[in-house]
Length: 202
Ligand SMILES: [Fe+2]
Ligand SMILES: [Fe+2]
Image (cartoon, rainbow, N blue to C red; front, side, top):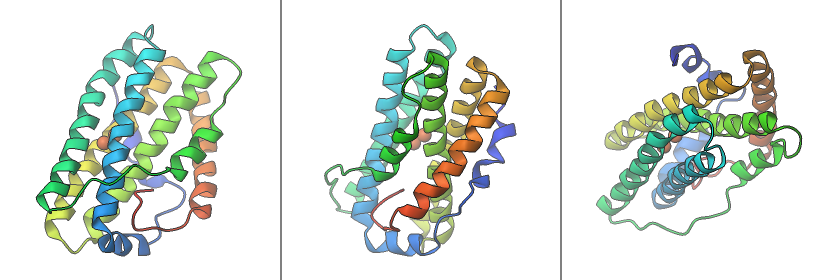
């Protein structure tokens, strides 16, 4: 699978994160780590349901199986970080960003179109998460945390590329590119409407 083609576009997201966000996260570390932990948990669970839903698509099953393990490993890393700091995993909250993305998914129509949107939703979340982790890895005052987030940034960049590659495996490249552009534009609208909060990854 070619990964390098896509990784350069990750930070080609149409709207960079508000620079105030990194400083806000430092004020609510327990909440941001909790939110981050659940992002990882949801990534693992979503990969499992994609495998269940598309069991007949061999490459999807083969490629996503190790991602489940990796995302759950991320959950455990974040949990460990909370414990190390004497902080607690809080409750899961409503994820306005992801809910808005899900609302944009094609619901009816053909199976390919639905599969495409499910893969692009994941690619979108990975790309934005990667961008956010990059901001944290560059802007936090705590050096340990800067390194902590750099690892996530690299990993989610690879996942972003994997979801785009899977889409291109099953759907024509042209259609993937065209729909991805629509997703990028729609994501700008979502980002502009969401409040900048230090207790949310997105
Ligand atoms: Fe992850
Ligand atoms: Fe990921």
